[in-house]
Image 1 (cartoon, rainbow, N blue to C red):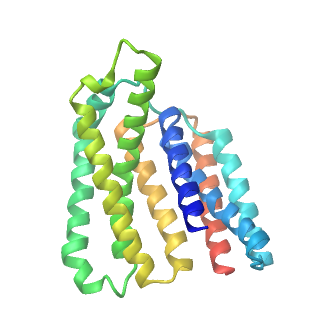
Image 2 (cartoon, rainbow, N blue to C red):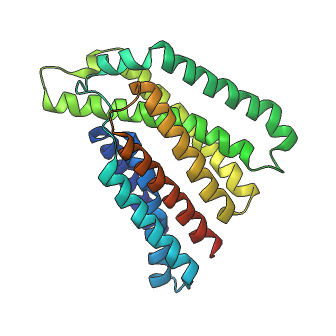
Length: 245
């Protein structure tokens, strides 16, 4: 049973990676809340865990918020999916500044704040996960797009470009850091508090990093406001769902 769960988890992460290769992170990351909804529904069916009225309302909010984001998600990214195009964006002064600040703040949180307040305040380790995770997401998107570009254009093998190996190293390191500090937060604090808090901060930072990398996005003011409303609807739904346990 454990191996079945592990295999399904790996398959899910592979599907997530493939999704990042085909569309923008600003759309995929908020939809991660649907995994919380599906987990709650499956738990009530197979584990006989009672889903309260508050939990059902939370599930409904997550679904409605996801629908709103899908319908109004702004266009973002570039039509050129080559690793050279991603290299141009990743090495731009704006994103270098953002990534440097994210790493610097994370180091301060890990080595200064962690030993002092890490066991009393869950935001210390959750913020580290979110900042490093926001870098991980955009580099994962760049790697996935480059792989798809190589498959679609066999004469333009992206693995001949040295920068793709830099991207792979960054993806591996950031994922490991994210997993380590998320587990620390889960070991120290209540899962019902960590999960919704992590979701909100991580999603927010991922949206910010995507906007910085792609230098904004194309959308009408109505679409932007609607997406923000959809995002907050999902956040409140996740909080309701976890507080109902």
